[in-house]
Each structure stands twice: as C-alpha cells, then as structure tokens.
Image 1 (cartoon, rainbow, N blue to C red):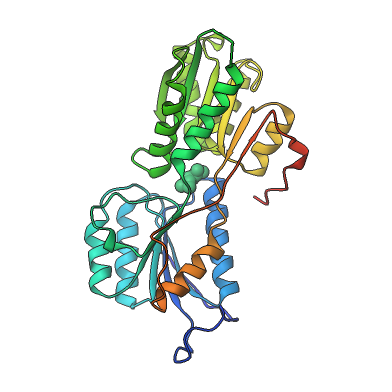
Image 2: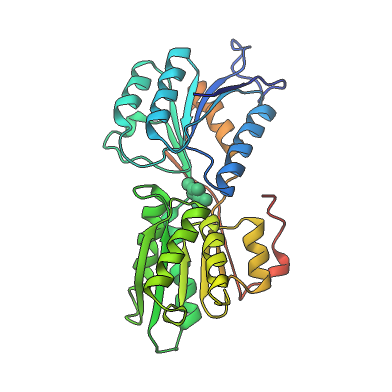
Length: 314
Ligand code: GZL
C-alpha cells in the first residue's frame, strides 16, 4: 500500500490557539480509473498543500479491502481526520466503528455509504447523482418532444453498487418513464473505464445493428470515449446517427459537444479539494458541520451557448 505523505508549508488559517501543528488528514482514494478521478485526486492534494494540511494519500486501486486497510493505518497513525471516497456503498460499518472508537472523525467524499448509523461519519461531501440522472432524462424528453416514435436507449453504467451508478440509473428512469416511447434496450456496468466502454459497445453492436439504437446514455466520459471509438469503426456518426449523453464534463467531451459528436454533457464536479479542507479543519477542531453537502453542478447541451463554457482544466 502506497502512502504518500504530503507535508505542507503554509497554514489553513490557524487552528485554535493551542494548536500549532498542522492537521493530519488520512485520505483513501478509491483508484485512478478515469479522467475525473485523476482530477479529483489532484484537487484534494493541491488543496491540502494550499491549506497547510499534512495529507496521507492512499490509492486503493479499485479494491475496497485496500481502502479498509488504509483507514486502519490512519487509525494506527492517529491522524486528526479520515476522509475517503468509497468505491461501493456497502461494507464500511466495521472499520468506521473502529475510527469512531479511536475518536477520529470521518468525512465521506464523492460517493456515499449505505449505513443505518449516521454517527459513523461527520459529513458527506459529494454530488447529487440522482439529480444528474434526472438531468440526462430531462434532456432526452426535450430532444424527442413531439417525435411520437420509439426511442431505443443503450446505457453504459458505472461501477455496480456505487452511488453514482445507482443515482444516475434511477434518476434517468424516473424521468423517461413518463413517455412509453423511451425504452432502455441494453444496460451494463462499464466500471467507469474507457476499455470497458469499448467492450460493451462492441457487444451492443453484435446484438443490434448500427441502425437499431437511437441513444447512448453513458455514466462517464471515459466510457463514452471508448464507445464512440467503436461506433465510428462501425460507420456510426456519433451525435447524429446516435444521440449521446455523457456524465462528468471533461474538456475532451466538451470539445466533442462543440463539434456535434455528443449532444448533452451532465457536469459532475471533481474539484472538491478546497471544500474538503475547510470541512477537515472544522471537524478537527470540533466545529459543527452539515451532515450532507452537495457540490454545485450544471448541464451543457446542444441547445446552450457552447462558446460560453469556460475551459474545464482537466
Ligand atoms: C462521480 C465519480 C465517478 C465519475 C467517474 O462522483 O465517483 O467516478 O463520474 C469516476 O468518472 O470514475
């Protein structure tokens, strides 16, 4: 397990008068599976440096057992605060009880956990994934309003049992179910990875001809890029022959949107680092924080002024 100790210079604004040493934050990141994740990690590490927080950063490489090991090592090291982005929603109560017993506050970042005991964490900072899914559905309703014809949808979902996959799946369906012309003809888990996006689209085009699908709804940009590569190999013009909705809003997908190769981009904001450091400072000094903080996000689609989209930076 690689623990990166980032020792920082300046201060986050001072801790209470009796505290001169920097806050020590143990962070378990779930992996580095996507462009979004790389930016999320960069945001957290950069924010720790700016805030004068000493961060122990661990990359779990998509294994929840590695996250549990990292959290236990943070407890042993007696960090001031633990934060982590849980790969999946379940399996965290035992180790979080250990952190609670050690008197170490826990902040959940990005994804969420499924627990009956809310005392196991001080705060959860992340996106509203259900809203993201609804936004994808709302775009389709707008796009096909009055078409009166069947719309066949292929969905490439994120990691099974992860909060973004659950929310984006359900929010989308809760909107499109209002119109019986919409049908999801294929859905599978692409683990938020480009390679699996390719694999799934290859499987779809073996099951259905290029003319038998109308929409691709992909839970992240990396899977979209893989799917588009395969669609183009099959002679499908993305954004024209097949309407494409993608989640995250990396610079590359925004460029595709501007070129008409993608029709709608649902933003999922990875830049939570500075908010996380403020929350870490507060919980470390016993200041109360909201239990749930949602990160601001928006939508970019073909009906918008695409020139107004600021550079994404990742
Ligand atoms: C969402 C995050 C998801 C992104 C993917 O907050 O957990 O995981 O949408 C990333 O790009 O892999």
